[in-house]
Image (cartoon, rainbow, N blue to C red):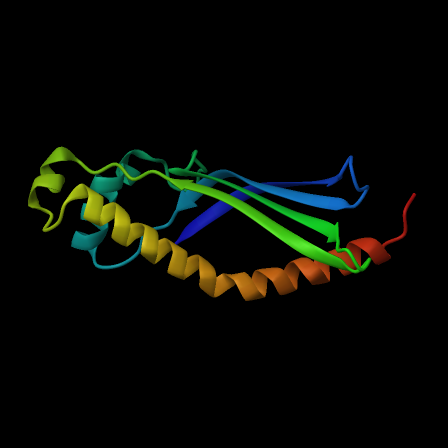
Length: 142
């Protein structure tokens, strides 16, 4: 399990005056569970064994999500999602030699797997953003 710490700030778009929500990845804590030999191997390969439990560390990736409220030609409001994601995985040279595929093939398969995982969450994320925006807009301003 990975627990992520993220930051969020809300801006008014300088061109439209409509809201933009910027969410960015800050740090993570990994809690690895399973059979002891598997946990040991995972921790050694990822460098997790050198990290103190219960502390957050910079992650192996970078993420920035921007959700904007945009006005369509007919005046209706809609949401625009822009996500930038970079994941870095370091494999020890010895492990690369015993893996049954090339580095390029691993990158291709990992990219497909990540895209599939992310796409499963898109609908629920969009619903959550819509609800959060409604709450934000109905809150009293000072």
